[in-house]
Image 1: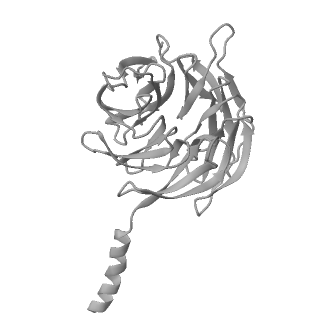
Image 2: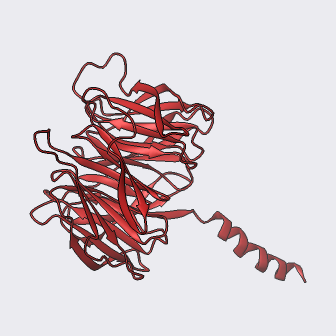
Image 3: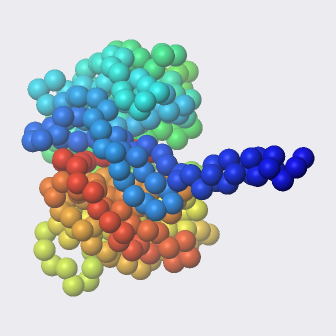
Length: 355
């Protein structure tokens, strides 16, 4: 091989390696104002830059969105006159096409989760206090709900199912109204109630979202009303509370409502969002005993951080600031877990971010 041939071989490889590594970020929104539905951005995983905002599909109030495991379908819940869960096919250009839609069987659907096999979906209905379980077909389409669980009880305060997650044969449901984390067990392809709450939750903290470690041994619940995180450990006989920590800076005295919670990729750190203080609380996690210690509260550079997410590399954290109509991007220090603000990008009423 002569020098010219060698150069012709090497140059394309160099250019390929220099090409920015990008992925697509999908953004669920409220459509009460300027938003029209689910948007998509190009996200640069080297610089943290968002660009090329486009409408992926027009749909009313896609306030929470979730991928199928093969990332060929996005499921969205829509609040409004017609409470629904909707399946969208992911096209080659990143746009979305309607597959079908089903009734959520409760007012105010606010969360959807898909099991690891991509065969079941669960929707949490905040206003109705119900959860609905759906069987999914090979093409990602939805069947009518196969099971509906109603957490409301006569004479008790209203249930507000806020999020649910599949974990192997378990289904956990956080109910903010009843102050419980329900546990259901799969038995002959049917979910049955295992526990009305895996731990006794005192007072009225309002458990909203939760994060489960990869091994399933620890669960971290963020409490909307309490401005706190409840840490729970799995035991031989069930679960026990091991920690309880405030998400707020010691000097903050205003009103606050917590929203979202996520573990870092290596599970050494835990992050939670504060609406009111308008911050992300950062915790260092003991990977042996599961306890956490707060190490930072950092401004979200916006107003009302609803949902946030980590990018696929684990190097960046992105926050959806609903009231200020922007997405803020933070760098994650891989050693300390602390955040540093990079930049923000305008988008109408963002409430859910999905890679």
